[in-house]
Amino acid sequence: MRASCEGAGVTGGWPADVCISAVFYPISWPSNPLSCYLRAPLMTGTVSDGKFTNKAAGFDAPTQLPVDDEQHRQWQLANKAWWERTPMRYDWREELESSHATADYFAEIDRRFYSSVRRFLPWRTIPFDTLISFDKLSSEDVLEIGVGHGSHAQLLAPRTRSYVGIDLTAEATEMTSKRLAMTNTPGKILQMDAEAMNFADGSFDFIWSWGVIHHSADTGRILKEMHRVLRPGGHCTVMVYYRSWWSYYLFAFLKVLLEGRLPSRSRIREVRQQTTDGAIARYYTCAEWNSFAGDLFNVKSSVYGMCIEAIPLPHGGLKRLLARILPDSVARFMTHRLAMGSFLIAQMTKR
Image (cartoon, rainbow, N blue to C red; front, side, top):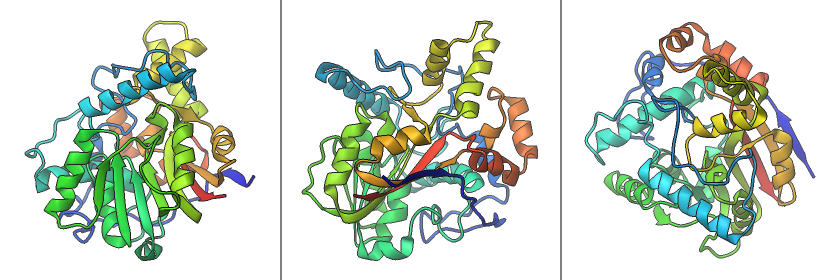
């Protein structure tokens, strides 16, 4: 099995004003990208009261899988219900200002998302071009698992030979379909459970999934389906949550102390689930993920994290102040080079 976990550096500066109208809606990034980032909620972050609710009953270990079919069914129902109620709009702390399902609405979602991405994963020309070989996509059939509100679909679809995006929820399917139609972007959006895809074997060359498959009732089933629908030599890039001593254990440890309680392994796990989006949220180490996926894929894993994760304080004014002061390069060194972030990005090739 070929498997690794590394902290390869990401190079590239931050242009003061980048227009990406060829990729998204015609918007220009603010001269200070941090301004949007500080208004936005954490991608794995907390809501205003510090807790997410409606969690799947019985899920209480970082990489736990269902024990039987009934628990699997209940977990997937909880997973679907959670994301129908709380779609990925990055509005957990601040409501979107734009009218629903308009061009401005999708552009505002993009600004919130990409303003944070630029800080921890700077791109050369196109967002995520350090992870995606965009020059090869024109000859590839691409599948995206988990479309959210279409930020990635808008990025990928125009550059592929064909693009299909799937999502478990009706909300994400409807919104992303409207977005692509609004911009005359080619592609197909389907409501589908990634644990049981309705595609023929060997249908795709590349699969992209950002922060999705660790929320499903059984992540292992999705990996098997990904392997099945990929062609020989097909490749995929996925982001799942990383269980680091810093962003997972230390942050939860400090939160428990602030509650005036005695930290314990079970309480730390409980806090991490309460402060993470989704009814289910698995956190893996690199070794765990490489072992989990290694029978199906050759795996190369790296750790990244949002710059604000470098500051072990609760969300608030002091954390925002320190985020303004902390250079992005220092934060990236901590979250990426020292593997203190919460994103495990796995680039995998089908065995």
